[in-house]
Length: 187
Image 1: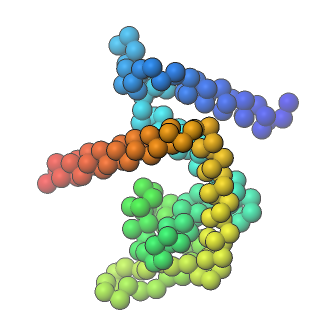
Image 2: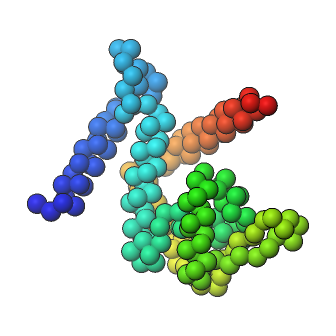
């Protein structure tokens, strides 16, 4: 049996273990069942695993065809959406590590997909934008990523998609509230 097949089966088993809840209990109840903390039922852990799994699976679209890494695609996607940004803003928007963004930007500039220009208001900042080739790559990957997303979400009916969207919005807002509060606690 090839190594990739064994790895896929192990990932499938982990996914089934993590997703194995029937939804009849809240995430908090499942994580603390019988007073025992269960990591695989802990909501932040489940989000982290889902995000990593989705990112890794989606990355085959832009890795195989364009040779891009996950951070590189996120830089391109953000620049495609916002036209021009400072690297620190890309870090914020994508909740990405500064060093990963910096390496991704350097590689994208070397590949001719991203251009750097001085900020007209602050000489300390560099503004990034897609080159013509970067725009082409962004426009080519976009529909492929959307089709992939549609396939992923096909396991949900229309009502579940609406509920999921609302829940994600509420949880994102709450997480940012926690973050803001923790950022001001040290002041």
